[in-house]
Length: 318
Image 1 (cartoon, rainbow, N blue to C red):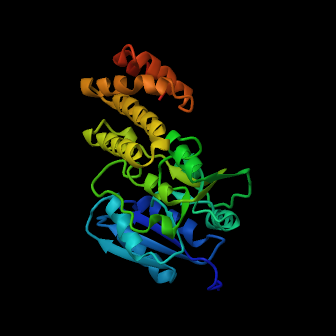
Image 2: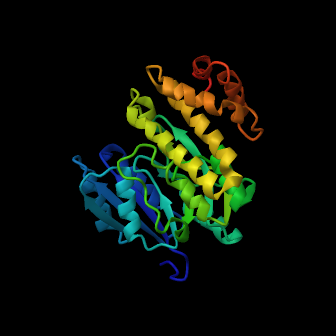
């Protein structure tokens, strides 16, 4: 029995067509070494047995609740979970992934130790189903404590952690009134930076405690979809916001947008001259940005003269 005075952690899991993987994911949540959790499974209109599996787990453990809804996409499912979450802290888990069994305990320990609003760890990438293993991670690493500005710059430059909503624990105050953009790809790019803007303190640990399943049908492994340009819609919004309200982050936002432009251009099957012009537009700024990753500064130096050449070269590096 958990101590009611202990912080409650809400674990939000969007579920859609993941019958082969779902039970393993949920087991990794139920077996957490920290007991005071609520698991919110959001069945986003699945037509396989995913919804039934959710209900079976809810009958088995009272910490599990299920929302059945019409299909609205990942963002809509997460928003539905956030609407009912009662935890002091929030964790997002994708339903084909799984967690180290002490994930919540370790992340919460650091949040409480430092009074942090966000705690981030690393991903462990897994390609084969036979690599599934529920285990506790005992390897502890250096704890890097970042203030508001340092954490935001780390997000923009991808210094410690990426944009994903997963592999992080958030204070509920950081996610309150923030919604994921419904119907968009790369929804985390347009959302998690808002959470970091709310955080006074962030802790990062280089510990692989979130197990990410690399699937052949993932967005990055499919033929290019023009909807992936949503990524650049979000990075332009970020640049505009930083220019107006947070000028200390504007240069970092430019570098982030430039990286996105290069990555999208590399993924496209055809040449998009408008995108090439945008790459060239920001190339000199990125080239002069000593905080930007060296590979992108080098690409920017080439792009200043020939963006199409820069993209051809970049395909071998990004």
